[in-house]
Image 1: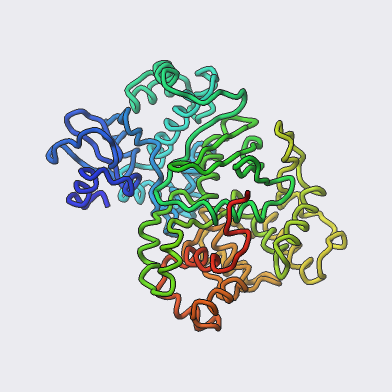
Image 2: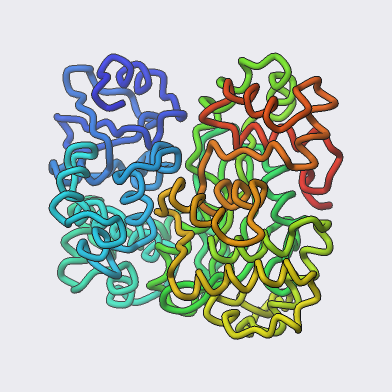
Amino acid sequence: MHTDTERCVRAVQSKDARFDGWFFTAVLTTRIYCRPSCPVVPPKVRNMTFYPSAAACQQAGFRACKRCRPDTSPGSPEWNARADSVARAMRLIRDGVVDREGVPGLASRLGYSARQIERQLLAELGAGPLALARAQRAQTARLLIETTALPMAEVAFAAGFSSIRTFNETVREVFGLAPGELRTRAARGPRPAAVPGVIALRLPYRAPLNPSNLFGHLAATAVPGVEEWRDGAYRRTLTLPYGHGIVALTPKSDHIACRLSLTDPRDLTRAISRCRWLLDLDADPVAVDAQLRTDPLLAPLVDAGPGRRVPRTVDGAEFAVRAVLGQQVSTAAARTHAARLVTAHGVPVEDPEGGLTHLFPTAGALAGLDPEALALPRTRRTTLTTLVAALAEDRLRLDTDTDWERARAELAALPGFGPWTVESIAMRALGDPDAFLPTDLGIRRAAERLGLPATPAALTARAAGWRPWRAYAVQYLWTVDDHPINHLPA
C-alpha cells in the first residue's frame, strides 16, 4: 500500500487507525516516522514519504515518533493472510527466529538461500531480515525498559542484542533517547502498580474487535491445569524456547491487557508474538466484514457483532493433539481427555495465583505414551499415536510458517484424519484465513436455519463468495447456535 501515495495521504490526513501497520509515514523535515493515526497535525504533503515497515524507516535514518509510538502499532495483516515466502519469513522474524538462529536458520526453515530471502524482503519491505529483526529487538528493549526494573545490561541481552554498546546505539538511534532517558520518561507518566517478575503491556489491534467468540471459545475449551478464565482474564501456561511462562490476557475497549511472567526474559518477543497470534490481533476486520456482508444471509450476523476474530493457538502441535481428542465427542469430553494427558505427561509449573499446574506435553513427551492407557476408541488411539510420532520425528511441522497446502496433504495422509480435523488445524494452528468446515455440526445447523445449502459440497460452492475469509465466516455461522463458545464467561 505504501506505493499508493494518494491513498496514504488521505489516511494520514484523516488519522485513520485502520491503516496502522499497513504503512508508515516518514517526515522529511523532522526526520521522524509515524503511524497513520498520529494525533499531531499532519505534515505538508511534500514533506511526507511512505515506507512499508518500521525497519525500512529506521534504515533510512528516521526516528520513531514519541507521540504515536509507531513501533507498537498492530502488525500488517498481510503476513497472516498470505502463504508465500515473504509472509512466512515475517511470521518467523516476529517469533524471534533471526535472534535465535540467525539469517541462515531463517532461510533453512523456508527452504531458500539466505541471499534469496534477503532479496525478497528488500524488494517488498525495504529492509532485510537483519534490519527487521533489529527493529523488533528495539521494540522489545523499549518494553523491558519501560515496564520492568531490570538492569540495562539484562535488558540488552534479554531483547536479543549481542552487546550493550549495540543496544545503547540502537535505542538512541530508533527512539532519539538513551535507554536511561526512556525509563525516566516512562516513570513520569501514569503506570500500573508493578508486580515483581511480571511484565505488563498493551497489545494493540485494529477496531472493531468482538471479544465474545474469541475469549468465549478459549474459555469454553480450556484444558484444566493449562488454561483457565479468572477475574475477566484468559490465563494459560506457555512453553517457550528458553523456559516457560504464564500469560493473562484481558479484553479492553481499545487494547488487550497482557501480563506475562517469564522464567527467562529472552522469551518476551516469542511470548508476545504467540499471544498476538492466539488472538488474531493483526487481522483487518473492516476488510473481512466488508467481504462477508456481500452475502445477504451472512450480513445480519456480521452486523450483529462485527470484528470477530479466529481463536487460534499458541502451539500448533498442541492444537493438533487436542483436535484428535475432540473428534466426535463433546467439548467437555475433549477437555477431560486433554486434562488426563496433561496430568500424566505435562511438565509441572508453579503459578502464584494457584490455578495453573502444568505445561501442555510436547510431542516428544507424548511419543512414549502407552496407547492402552488412553480412554479412547482403538482407532482414535492409532490416530493420536501416529500423529505424535510424526510430530516428534519432525516429519510433520505445524508452525506459523508451515506451508498450508503441504501441511493439509501430510495431515490427510495420516490415519483417522478427515476433512473436519484437517481444516480445524489449518484454521486454528496454521492460521489459514480461508479454512472452511462444511461438515461441522454447528455449521450445518447454522446453514439449515439461515437457508444456506445443506450438503457440504453445495455449501462449499456457496462459500466461494466468502473467500479468502471463510475461516471468519465460520466464526459468524457458529453464533447461530447458543453455545458457550459464543459468550464471555460470567
